[in-house]
Image (tube, rainbow, N blue to C red):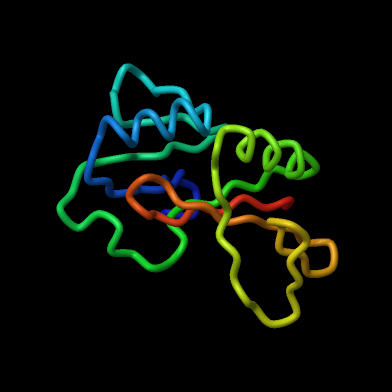
Length: 122
């Protein structure tokens, strides 16, 4: 049934204008089909919507697998003022802002509402 259908990440925000500045200006996402809060990211869709419950999630809201581009993307985001989250996880070390476990590398960051976003080299 759903195994052949696309899914999308849905992220609640309190301030749509601040979210647009972040998702478009910092992350470089493009609006999809004229909908001001629907973004295209590769073959995926990211839905951003205003909600009084924004930033109540303490877990990752969206993940991007960027392969070998991770270091360049991290450098670009850092140059734009993004700060990365640092977590203690079993068998994972921190190299600068990048969490490393064997060949796996990842960073986590927050949007203006505190939603946790994840980028990894997968």
